[in-house]
Length: 240
Figure 1 (cartoon, one colour):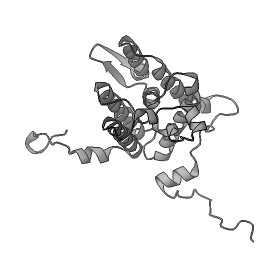
Figure 2 (cartoon, rainbow, N blue to C red):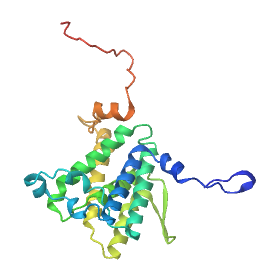
Figure 3 (cartoon, helix red, strand yellow):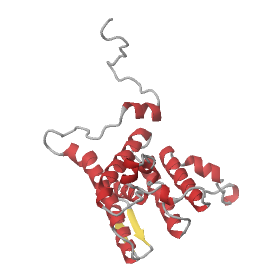
């Protein structure tokens, strides 16, 4: 994209495009594509990836807690659509005003959503939660960009908060189960409610942050944090 000298378009190379994607989105995209490629070439089987709490507890296959979020099905048009939505809305959130320069807070949102989905999963028939996690990001982005105009296939316009519901209706028209999308919408709303609504409500939680980013995560993602005014580091508080 973009125009070069003489108005001729400048093509962006793949590595330029790839490394412009913000950190968390880039890693999620990379792991998802690599997982699908490994399954496609029979290096691993999807049966070793899906969420199964019995195997996690009895066989100690703890990797299933994580791998179920990275498999979006074999290469197909459906897979391409999932990768598109993952990159687009995950990136819009991570680069947007909500999380720009706050990778640790963005990763905390992702981990919060994933943890809540793992709690819901035993009560549903969903074995791969990547689509739900992507849908959660679509929901949060829509709620935080309420004035952003959207258009569906050139047919009609609607505000951004309607986007997850429009996508849900469309997938149901195509015969897909609504459970995966509804999990994403529910978890996205829980995060939005705790992070954006509760701190504004009158009462004991007004002005308080309910979802905290662990200090170790902030250090790993963003490096040492500058001290606020009046703060100092105490190496030996007890004087021993």
